[in-house]
Image 1 (tube, rainbow, N blue to C red):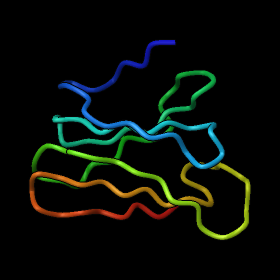
Image 2 (tube, rainbow, N blue to C red; image 1 turned 90 degrees about the vertical axis):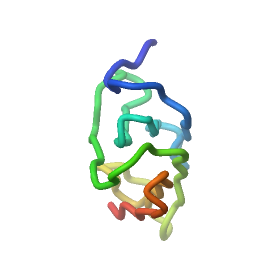
Image 3 (spheres, rainbow, N blue to C red; image 1 turned 180 degrees about the vertical axis):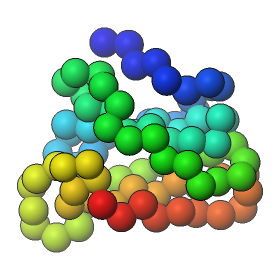
Image 4 (cartoon, helix red, strand yellow; image 1 turned 90 degrees about the horizontal axis):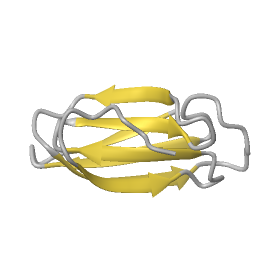
Length: 88
């Protein structure tokens, strides 16, 4: 399975806590959430003004459902000197 969608290099990836989604961070200033089975984009996260350097998931609560970000939070780190917490 090859995931394509960023316009620049990808420099960080992380699996969701349940393993059914993958998040990628790129120098193109975006993070993309992917369905790890189909390879389809679930969401493109925009909000940083410079390259992303990292992405990480965190489970919240006890729910095991995954609709969009669902029961998870995703954090992205950027060269714009900010972190964004994306809360499903």
